[in-house]
Length: 381
Ligand code: AOF
Ligand code: ZN
Image 1 (cartoon, rainbow, N blue to C red):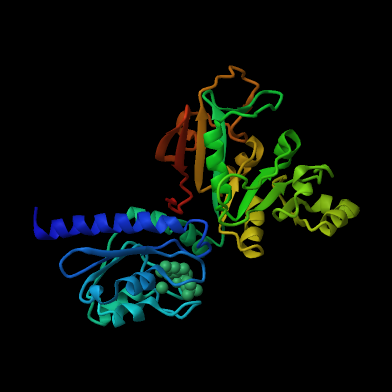
Image 2: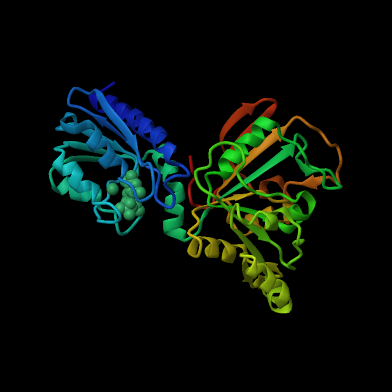
């Protein structure tokens, strides 16, 4: 192996470490990016690692530099995202890097934010040795941020629990519980890290869910969002009884909105955000809903916990970025039992939608599978 090859391997390993560290910010830093950094001194020793901890707080690079002091002089900074050049809520990281006398900066991916990018060129012009590496874990770490900056849409994670034969519920709609208690705890943890939880009126009528994060420590409070075209949500629905716990948006058709003014006034009076959506080819536009969640409610991440119709609509509109699937060792053996999604009828297997497997974990007797869905937006960690 040449010295250049060995350096590339070490660089990739240290960026891997920075990316793992950056993940700790999930649920704390959005809509800002998750970022991790590692500092190495002139002898090649790791002298510190830090991550971006909270939106509006100091960036990962500054936290690292503050924690390492003079030990980073002439050393190397590994960062998953290009250091920023701008004065935002915090001062530019490029300034801190220059002041610290760092000699080399290794970057896992460039900053898609036009206001903050350019750090690599700036540092290079100042005489530093700057390397930009195509580093998949760094790209995954900033995928949520990149997706919102480039499309204006939140990152959508479809979550479901299915039987081994691919069903969400029995034909009568019974589904409690398919996945194990341990799997369900993980879902509550995820609910406590996202900005919105999206479901359809079918799930509300069948399960009467609260869609709150009740297990584990919550990092943020997700807005509950129900797609209810005809405003059928019952007055005693748990979602309406728990408006003090988390906000609620109900998306309906613009015709129901116009046709049921008393119901709209009643819901709005209770504090519900009632959103009329125009029909697109006979269905409500999910893209419009996501634009509303991002633009009005500043949502970066949406967890979908829905039945087959809503999931099918989101897939058809190409709006799903990631799937989180719990497979339980149960067989229903019923062709009429509820499928995972509807709305597609490919003639051949090759015409089916394919996803990319990212990870698999055993949780008791369930298997958790995580998939990336290619909308051209990459994948998150
Ligand atoms: C972060 N954390 O560790 C890095 C970021 O408003 P500000 O000052 O927090 O600036 C946010 C921008 O800074 C963000 O959009 C991204 O382009 C860049 N880098 N941001 O929140 C970090 N390194
Ligand atoms: Zn910065």
